[in-house]
Image 1 (tube, rainbow over the protein chains, first blue to last red):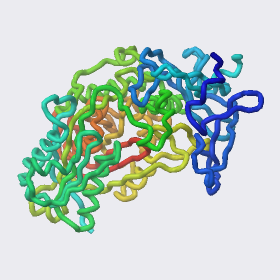
Image 2: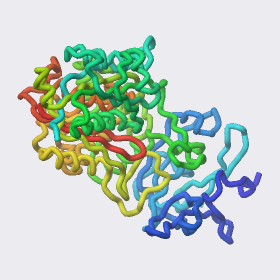
Image 3: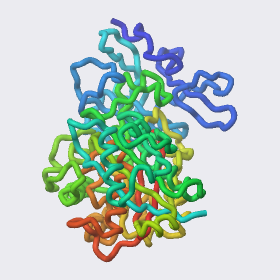
Image 4: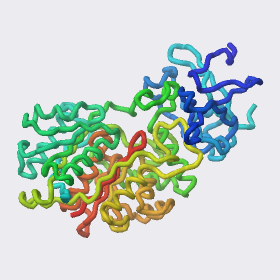
Length: 138
Length: 381
């Protein structure tokens, strides 16, 4: 199954550039200039902004127990996963799942890049969500 | 404007009470507080009360008596108790009534909280992909703080060790067994850097406080403590809160900083004047960070403070003398009032084996919760 065929898990969350690379969408409040992620629905108030695709790990943790469902929609079988806040240049700090990195290698300041992750819902359906992964990994 | 006094306090023990609903535990706490003061329910002119997940507080009139009193329900997340107290404080200060209660209670199922994204104005994917957990927020706020200010894992452990040691001495606490530092540090991780002993658990319990004007308190011959400040504040720009898909790049202060400053100003005292403090300790990192956010020390000083035992019952500034949320659990509606209960008991010299020596005069309490709200109260003997 091609990953790019899975639809994104939500509207106004991410888009893809001409090269097919994912980009996160935020909104800039036209009144205050404040950046808000994800992009709010109110297009009159919020200007659509594409966030930087690279950043550094600002903080992190490991989710070691299966979250309660709802709201968690992942499969019943559970494996711990990494979560972090990623500082995207000088723009905003975004919370994200972290993939392609050993838990022991996580450290504040780690260079990261945006990628996508197929997320399997309890129903077995696959949706595309965003994640960050170490910059050096392919 | 009238001075406001807390003249009596009641508690239903925290923990798990299978036979009683949360509401019944609330009724228990109210009856105990009134009995201590020698008052009848019919003396109570007004009430503020709330729970997060155990029902409507005002329905307790069917147990306590249909006196027709003004009963206002409060729902303000983790600051529900603090907000109920603020209501009682303002009502008496304004001279509207001269005797009333604040009551908070709760009863949560086992395990972590399971919030629904829509209730918090968040998109569904945030919950679906496993990012909407209070535990993750506390872990990441602490992880960042440790790196910025040189706080060690051992210090996280020592806060838990103190909490359980204090809980042994508090009859209303849930966890009443001491746990040694080694066990705390080597226990399974829940959300790094926290092991299972470093997080509090949602639980059950209830607290009721009786408030009176200074004049009414004098007539009743009940001194109690004076409520010198009660402040509730929401989040400012750049703060770091529970359930945040993103944070402002330019960092700012916290709702705790705002509530703390407001309360100190209201009371006309400084952090150095406080003799005993109850600070929100959802996990051990929260207690550490809240020491600085409330103005008691500079960022990073906690490492030395805790190593020297300054925050123990016999230390210079005893913190969470009943074991806090770590030993008592966190029934949301009751938790903030438990802190004030503990200060009341300590300042009136009724704390028994956990009594802080030297006749503490000023007690400080601080509760924090989602989505970025803090409540602070300062009481004086």
